[in-house]
Length: 95
Image (cartoon, rainbow, N blue to C red; front, side):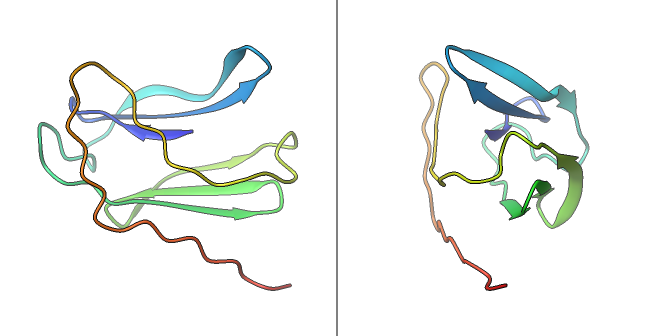
């Protein structure tokens, strides 16, 4: 899970059975727009290599051998959040 928060933070986690594994715990970032401003998140997965961007700027590049395959989804969490998804796209890039 790749997430940005309204306080200008970002984090990356992997779910394993009944708990979350920190790939990057909540981290303050100048590229994350705080408050109600719009943020664009991009994730690229190639094999075990995961690249994460916020608003066009790479913020993390992580290798995780536990993620050889999987699915894609959208998750929203928090208390009293209002979320508007303007665009959600998944593109498979061939070998």
